[in-house]
Image (tube, rainbow, N blue to C red; front, top):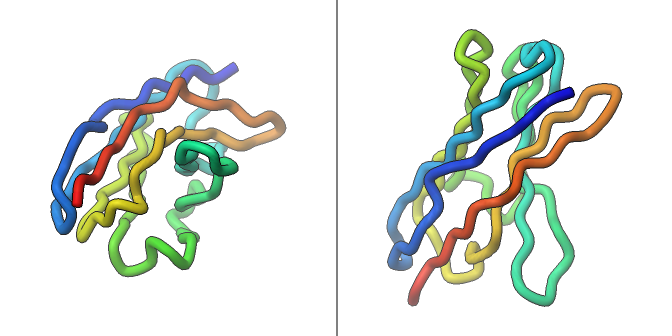
Length: 114
């Protein structure tokens, strides 16, 4: 069992930056693929970025070059650094842990004003 708690969301102007953090507790963190999804109002939840235990990353095309995902296995945390934010990045951002099961955090709101 894995528990995930996100932090760091908020309101920012277009072009600004925000960092999201996710703290995990419970099972062996290093075994899980960690990632971030987001869901904007009226839209389906979509993948933002993932990172394997070894540090291999994958990004949605819409965030490549602007967002960076990282993890600290010793601290059981995963971080999403978001730069050059756009209004279309506005969404609830969810942390996930994927192993034999998938675990979700409660979500944190990111709002980018134009």
